[in-house]
Image (cartoon, helix red, strand yellow):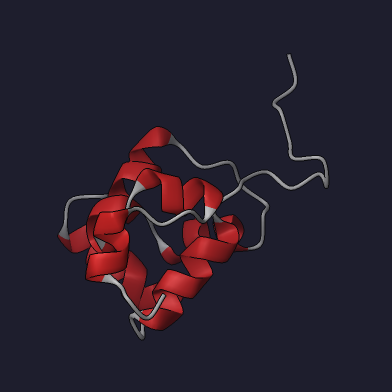
Length: 93
Protein backbone atom coordinates (compact mmCIF):
# COMPACT_ATOMS: atom_id res chain seq x y z
CA UNK A 1 0.00 0.00 0.00
CA UNK A 2 1.51 3.36 -0.99
CA UNK A 3 2.11 5.97 1.67
CA UNK A 4 -0.13 9.00 1.75
CA UNK A 5 1.16 12.35 0.55
CA UNK A 6 -0.17 15.86 0.74
CA UNK A 7 -2.25 17.08 -2.20
CA UNK A 8 0.89 18.75 -3.52
CA UNK A 9 2.87 15.48 -3.40
CA UNK A 10 4.96 16.54 -0.40
CA UNK A 11 5.71 13.91 2.22
CA UNK A 12 5.17 15.88 5.44
CA UNK A 13 3.40 18.83 7.02
CA UNK A 14 6.11 20.06 9.38
CA UNK A 15 8.77 21.41 6.98
CA UNK A 16 7.77 25.12 7.14
CA UNK A 17 7.42 25.07 10.92
CA UNK A 18 10.69 23.16 11.39
CA UNK A 19 12.58 25.67 9.23
CA UNK A 20 11.00 28.60 11.06
CA UNK A 21 11.82 27.15 14.50
CA UNK A 22 15.38 26.27 13.54
CA UNK A 23 16.05 29.78 12.20
CA UNK A 24 14.26 31.37 15.17
CA UNK A 25 16.67 29.51 17.48
CA UNK A 26 19.67 30.44 15.29
CA UNK A 27 20.53 26.83 14.50
CA UNK A 28 21.95 25.36 11.32
CA UNK A 29 20.72 21.92 10.29
CA UNK A 30 23.98 20.51 11.62
CA UNK A 31 23.54 22.35 14.95
CA UNK A 32 19.99 21.00 15.30
CA UNK A 33 21.17 17.46 14.55
CA UNK A 34 23.86 17.86 17.22
CA UNK A 35 21.28 19.08 19.79
CA UNK A 36 19.01 16.15 18.98
CA UNK A 37 21.87 13.67 19.32
CA UNK A 38 22.90 15.17 22.68
CA UNK A 39 19.33 14.49 23.80
CA UNK A 40 19.47 10.84 22.73
CA UNK A 41 17.81 11.06 19.31
CA UNK A 42 19.54 9.45 16.34
CA UNK A 43 18.66 12.15 13.81
CA UNK A 44 21.41 13.48 11.58
CA UNK A 45 21.71 16.53 9.32
CA UNK A 46 20.64 14.59 6.24
CA UNK A 47 17.36 13.59 7.89
CA UNK A 48 16.66 17.24 8.73
CA UNK A 49 17.51 18.33 5.18
CA UNK A 50 15.17 15.72 3.68
CA UNK A 51 12.34 16.67 6.07
CA UNK A 52 12.77 20.38 5.36
CA UNK A 53 12.68 19.77 1.59
CA UNK A 54 9.55 17.57 1.87
CA UNK A 55 11.45 14.51 0.63
CA UNK A 56 10.93 12.44 3.76
CA UNK A 57 8.08 11.31 5.94
CA UNK A 58 8.32 12.17 9.64
CA UNK A 59 7.98 9.52 12.32
CA UNK A 60 6.19 9.96 15.61
CA UNK A 61 9.55 9.69 17.37
CA UNK A 62 10.91 12.57 15.29
CA UNK A 63 7.83 14.68 16.06
CA UNK A 64 8.41 14.03 19.75
CA UNK A 65 12.10 14.94 19.42
CA UNK A 66 11.41 18.25 17.64
CA UNK A 67 8.66 19.08 20.12
CA UNK A 68 11.00 18.50 23.06
CA UNK A 69 13.99 20.33 21.56
CA UNK A 70 11.98 23.41 20.62
CA UNK A 71 9.50 23.24 23.54
CA UNK A 72 6.62 23.48 21.10
CA UNK A 73 3.33 21.61 20.70
CA UNK A 74 2.60 18.90 18.16
CA UNK A 75 -0.24 21.04 16.80
CA UNK A 76 2.23 23.79 15.93
CA UNK A 77 4.60 21.36 14.22
CA UNK A 78 1.85 19.73 12.18
CA UNK A 79 -0.63 22.53 11.52
CA UNK A 80 1.23 25.71 12.42
CA UNK A 81 -1.36 26.44 15.12
CA UNK A 82 0.12 27.75 18.37
CA UNK A 83 -1.33 26.80 21.73
CA UNK A 84 -1.42 29.25 24.64
CA UNK A 85 1.72 27.56 25.99
CA UNK A 86 3.46 28.01 22.60
CA UNK A 87 2.55 31.70 22.61
CA UNK A 88 3.88 32.12 26.13
CA UNK A 89 7.18 30.35 25.40
CA UNK A 90 7.70 31.76 21.89
CA UNK A 91 5.95 35.12 21.54
CA UNK A 92 8.05 36.11 18.51
CA UNK A 93 7.00 33.10 16.41
